[in-house]
Length: 220
Length: 132
Image: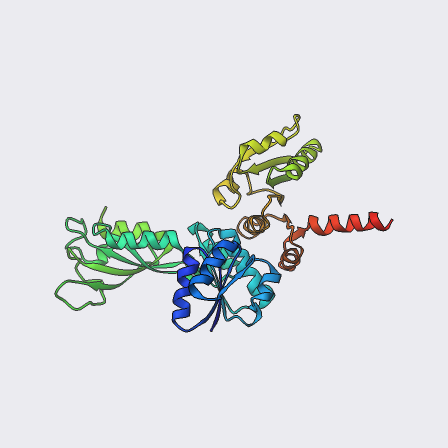
């Protein structure tokens, strides 16, 4: 695959190294000559100096034959424009943008950027997973459906322990998909399943009801 | 008419003064309060510190209910993104975007943003003058 990476900062550099390692033809576009020189010294001639939002630079980069463009500069607005220009002017099939402000995700999707990656959200999700007392972890966001797949831990002392699933006041649209219990096979809960301490419940919920689901499952 | 202007540089400040003088309701937004020194002394509109790429700042600036949004910062991409937020998130009926780069201007014109490029306009004016 031919992949263009816009932005030669740390993310762009390591991403390119990984993509090259996987055997993809990869080009970085970076505007600062010093940074560009440094990348070329280390990775070979894979860096084009220029503005990745500018049509002339993208022509030089051979963008019309690129399979993918990934914009990872530190500025959301630059990443947005690089992806939009690639998409609309050069018909690049897949565009990926790094975003700093997680709230920009909706706008980017609306404007035709195929994938957004929010470093802020990823760090947050990893912290949630690593902090043992944190009851709710995001596993997956289905942006176009407005749904979240979450993992809720039932910590000892929760008010819901010993209760039947049908007695929980789950927010509408939320579905408990799976219960993962120690010393037992994961099972799909039904209305008569009993919540136990230490259970991990995998659930699907509308994004807006996430907090309500957490409260329904933890009892507080 | 209710107007929200982003970027209180020379053009932004002047436009804000002119529209305010004509009796329109003007709000001007800039990331740096020092920029507001450029506003004319009789300016009776609102001046707000804020970044228009931040939806909260846009709301404080009264974007909901604004008739026209004008983006006049120094950054083409910043203007482009702010205008698309105004148009697609807040459904502002008219958004106007300054884009210095003529090629980028064409692309966003095609994408339905009302754009103008001072580069093109000024070069054309100079060309006329030199020919005349």
